Image 1 (cartoon, one colour):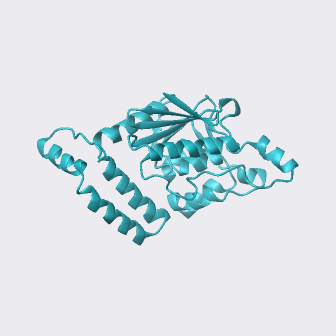
Image 2 (cartoon, one colour):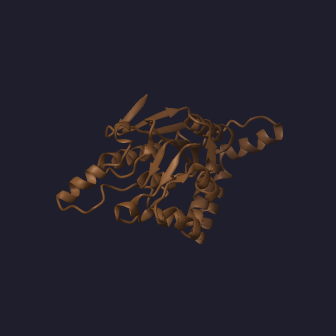
Image 3 (cartoon, one colour):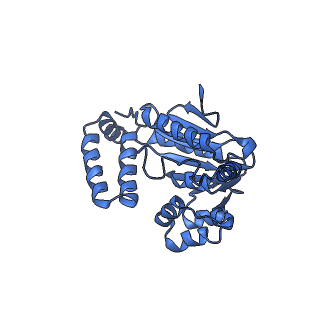
Length: 261
């Protein structure tokens, strides 16, 4: 069953994978207030469903993953004297979930689209995808994007991406460390979903969640907190069904039957 959030975002469970789809193709999936709300609610829906172990974020329409912030909505706000942002992603300041989130990017990925991708753990990109941080071109500055870019790519690559705001190819982004896999034309969503399904079939979900949380907190939070949290989660995992099943399956040379418990 497909759920819709704020008429902007679709949510569907495919086995143990949540497929979250930006669904405003007539506006190139630009972020207005409802798009922010829809993405955030879909992420919370995924976070709170224990039967879902991984998510893919993708977009409808041929032209863009996302054209970034909705400039028409920003213009209307400006005419009313409103300078605040249209909204914000809950991925900006928080891990949200320790379950893996995979991005499937095609077409133009601009501004807030890049910010959403930076909140994901693994990025697939169509060979023709184009990544643009456009804020300087319209006379403003990105805030969350430089913070996350610096930690993911390092200072020099992040600065080159940010300044002067030219588009970067999928190939450049792969070399810089933002994109992991470049897909053939038209295959990026299928490739990302196949990878997510593979994660759910081959890896213990509790182990993946513990590793993500340890990694995320070491990079974006605090190394000591990350280590303490990782050790605590490992102690609990070693009491779980999945830990027993994983060991037994390895010794018996068969695929494991993980249950997430």
